[in-house]
Image (tube, helix red, strand yellow):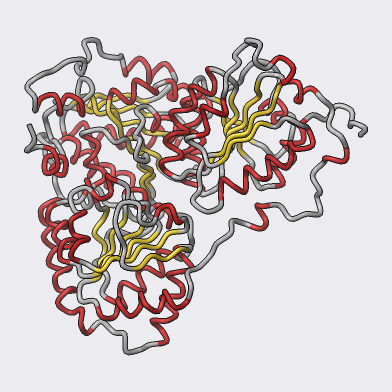
Length: 570
């Protein structure tokens, strides 16, 4: 086969990515010319590099989570892959579609102790949907097309490809070039399936007979354009109380009278009572992992449970369901709404008491939690300040630390589209939200992106501040400075000990922010909150970063939901 002069696998990969509708690459440069350098020579691709692979993988994650499109992460063997693994582990847990591409040890010296030689396939296999090492050039384009397909179909997730160095230097055969006449996966879109009609009718029957039904939307319902409208229509027709998982927030306007925020560790006590009173729970597009079930898993034993997901592994994983349906969230809801419209007798006459109960709970929780503004409650006060100053169009990137847990709880913080939150999966890797916030801003330049995280997490990922400034990404970083690692400190305190949790030396946040031309403020009073948030909004509109240091005692303003779950243990 005759090669095409100067056309390498990396050049061909750039063309294929564009044809697949992928326009952005994330990564950190490595040794020698690779995919980033090939992309730099091609129009139509934007490259976003970081100074640390951990920030780069976070950027790719944040972009994919907010845009709904797969993201390409370019890395390098050995320490490059090792540094990425934290984010890949999180992406696998959170079902984020990443296509990770790396060069690798040349085939002819594999096993001889080559520079940065690592068994990357073995390292990545347990945390990706698919791993593949391209051993022959004729498999290169097939592998990339399959990688894109695997990343976006079924339950999304990361995939990994590696290309031996010696293949990257070869000129590619003309017979192996992408067939431009074939439709790309981008044009075809992901494959969606729907549950069988008979199963949907069974759910409809249960729904009409139920007196206290609940619908729960998970992260798998994100980026399906009609889920919100269909859910609200069904809720109003059938008297459904609407909940989401943490990753599902932003699908539903939480100000709707039937909406009650997220479930699990984050549900406020007034709202949690509804979960235990329900006689039907219908969960859609959620894996129902441990944190999502905390504090109410027992409610399933006294209710009729219906579970719908696009991937069979999510079903019968943590809770036994009376009905299990395999299929896409939107297609299921469309069919359920169609059946509801055909049967005008479905009504909500048997739901009147439930609707009255929802109204009572809504009024109670709003009266207790919606207007808190107190210097003794700094985290709750800053969250209310964000709502007032930045409005609805906020993407709140959250960590899973102790104090920032307040941001998960409605109505302490209320989410209304187009605003949303971006949260970690069940791994909750410290430092990762720093990179995620950059990717979120790249995905949605109009949004006010705010990263809310603890000082421990911030210090693990603060090189993202420099990358944000270099890429002119206007992001507000709110660092809850409680002097160390508060989650371990909270847990150690119940055993009467303290070791390794308190920071003896503090990072100079002011110097960091000013070194990149950003805004800095240290927040200790309510008046400072208001002034600082206003200045932060003005700075970020000019594509500059803002860094707000919220000073909190480690045992101050502890989330009530955490205290309910863990506070009585010792």
